[in-house]
Length: 531
RNA sequence: GGCGGAGUAGCUCAGUUGGUUAGAGCACCGGAAUCAUAAUCCGGGUGUCGGCGGUUCGAGUCCGCCCUCCGCUACCA
Image (cartoon, rainbow, N blue to C red; front, side, top):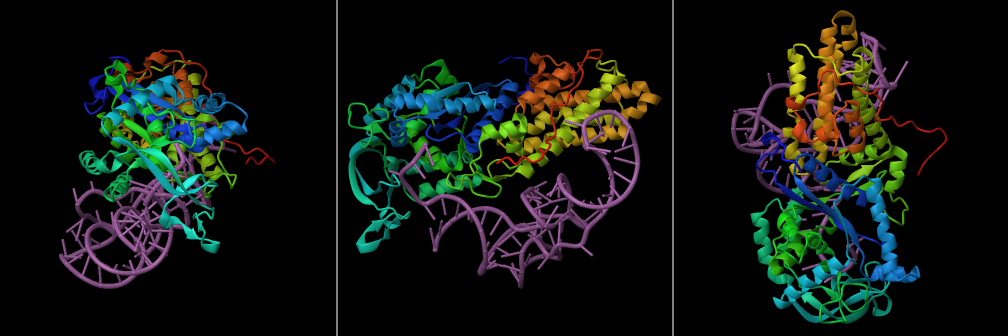
């Protein structure tokens, strides 16, 4: 972005460029809280880095191939392409509703992607990393899945059944395979050199153990359906999910043009954010594909946890899927964004409950932060002629509070570096608590009658602290903090981290608009229960 | 079964390399204040730190055994 960041705001371990991705979401699903959560985490990360002056590329998108999509399109009586054009829009809408700031939205049905995957395939084929064989196994038509011999259970009359109870049949089809097994040791070496490759740490252990247990070659093509990227020089095959889907990260960086500015700037990706269910694909298959193709693997894969709904596992059959659009409608966007990253240590599973949502929203947003801003800005509006007051000499308590605001950014860096969003918010709210305490101790409403200059100083200190808190909270709640900064008459161009600290402090005499609450309390509506 | 993680106040959890009377938030009770979105601030906990044993001057923090819960153990994204 700009070169105005001071060295202090750009420590040496901060990269100049940062490429982060969400998984591409399978269009067959309706957007749910899990999608919103993954992308939100990336959005907050991306916004933080941009405010810090980093050149960010933030990618999300949709996965649009596969047998299920093909079937769903037939059921919807649409051509597959028309079908995916329609449903992929649901995920763009989610992005709008959640105020996501992704720089690109990739779809696997786009030309650029087909070109990219086919280029990767050709390289793997030339290097003999892919070979043609046949895939055989026990297949359940009902489950649309293969099962291992040891998973099967005995049914009536010697019939074999899937663990789900469905009948299985022995199926053989030709398939290309990726020589995954030969990458076992290179992967282990890679993990050894990059112990933080997978986060949280316990997930790294799982991945390592999995690889240590030995790897089987991976089936990477299918002949049983057509809706996919064609395998080069073999029209009977389309690519199976792994190579197709994972390669989206390369495509968006400009692959196969590895000499391009885009690719040189952004590859290898700094962070792939994923749900824990697809960790293995990202932490094992993906780096193996890349190493085999001679492309550098990404720097980090973060596997976050799952949400439950009122302590119940979320599932379609239970009908308790959490609709992010409804959440936003009910509680407002920023409270939802705040809740999702505050309620649960990032990386762990968490529970969504109405009482927890309302408690966080009312006590931490409305009472702690919202009310702090409102009480301070109201006093300034009424007692300081609606202008930033002129501070007098600073006392010890004033300096102590201001200093806490000034040192916040440095305290937040390490938390952002490890995606510990809950700790970031915790640190910010500690200063909010300090500011509320300071307000009570200094009692500017009493100073109004006894010492106006001192009152001005106290209110100035508080306004300056609120400026810092607002700037730093922007990644989480861009709308609300934007309104707060409007109320402090901070120019939109002066809201990045380079403007933190005393050099760009509020100027006395700046006129301020009439303050309005930005974090409403949630009041239960009588006689209305929403599901 | 194998490997890994976790069991700390009513609830959710912090507790660095072992060291003064084990902490935070929420909830609950009492008080102060009245600038503010009836918001804020202060005070209040006798918790077998899962159980047993061990190492140590000293263990929630190290070692051993046991109990309980959770995750991973390959082709549904």
